Amino acid sequence: MNLRHAILQRLQSLQCAGIEEISRPQARKLAIALKESEAKNAPKPVSDQAGQTVQTVSTADFRPWEKRTPGPQTAQASPAQPSKSFTPRPKTTASSSSYSSSGSASSSYMAPKRTALSLEIIVPPHEDYSALPLMEDRHEALRLLGEKVRQCVRCIELVSNRTQTVLGVGNPYAELMFLGEAPGADEDRQGIPFVGRAGQLLTKMIENGMKISREENTYICNILRCRPPGNRAPMPEEAFKCRQFLDTQIDIVKPKFICCLGASAAQYLLDTTTTISRMRQREYRYRNATVVCTYHPAYLLRNPSQKAATWQDLQFLMKLMGLKVEND
Ligand code: URA
Image (cartoon, rainbow, N blue to C red; front, top):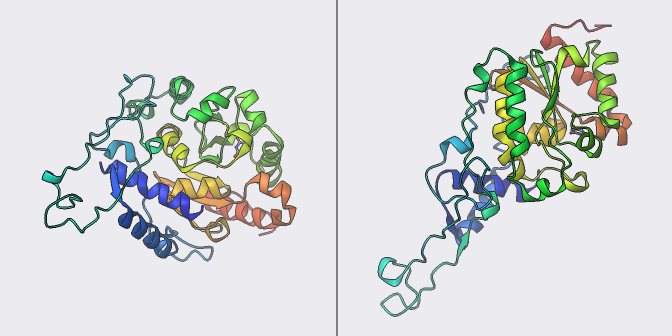
């Protein structure tokens, strides 16, 4: 995740706190502070490969849309909500501001130019899906969630490019969830995650490597439920807008283990900019699940030399799950 993504994430947090604009000096400071704190802010693993306990990180409360204070609504509102247009905050006037740029004692002082936060990343209000994880029938809960996902029009670019939305596949009672990035062309056509070449490799990793059934023992979903055009990586604002769907899926399936496939999945889930190579072989926590990270199967298709490292990661996961690891 680059600095631009990190800044967008920070802007989203500010929006959630009800802040609608920041001054240029503030924006500059934000960029510098972000650069400096990028390394420091990496989530701390619960334990590393040697099993040594490290500080716990809790991102379980990452539901920014719920913390949002009443403020401007996006023009791209959820279909279930009446569309409200965005009303910019009135410009600060001379009488109400000490930053007056006209007349008065402060005439030599140029008001800092204000930079409006991008409308694109204002999160529309979500419906309340908190009843779904309480349903006994997880298939039905996911079916209901899938209906909501199908109606979603939050990300204009994704909505106009998608054939259909892609929620998830597998057993909603499974202990293990695999989390990918976003549907590709094949997934967009079939409406099922990981059915293309990367999906076939994932199936081999699960069935031939871990010796468990993909269909019976796993549930698979993605950071995004729509295909990004040209298979580009998800934008932070897209991941953000799709997050309630992901969190609701996690709450319905209640996995004990989540395996993030690739940097996008790991970084968005755990809200970090740490590289995937530094996150693998470690244990994190998210919403009552133990989280591990490894390379994305699509990356392995391009870089087969990383398959050995990925196998180590799967063995690390298998040990955590109490599965038998051969030759151990
Ligand atoms: N890559 C992903 O990250 N997810 C899919 O569903 C397919 C390919």
